Length: 67
Image (cartoon, rainbow, N blue to C red; front, side, top):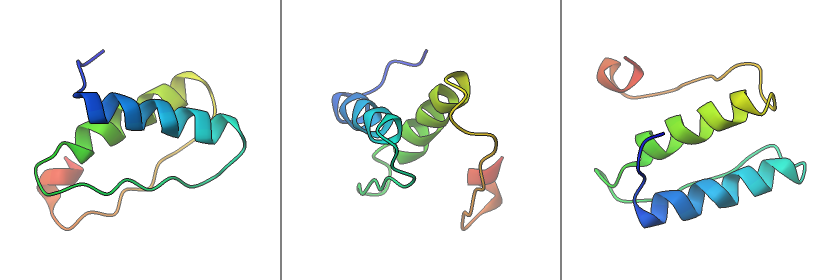
């Protein structure tokens, strides 16, 4: 697993708890370059590992983010 920054790990833990409690959406707001994509990828991987999701739809402004 990637070493996350403190805010990323805290947000990751909150997101997992949020989904475990039956919620279907979770928002994350941070400045550009803060590491939202790394946070999202790590959280999505964990949700796949927990078999809580089947697919992910990514909407991004550039191909660099989608790649």
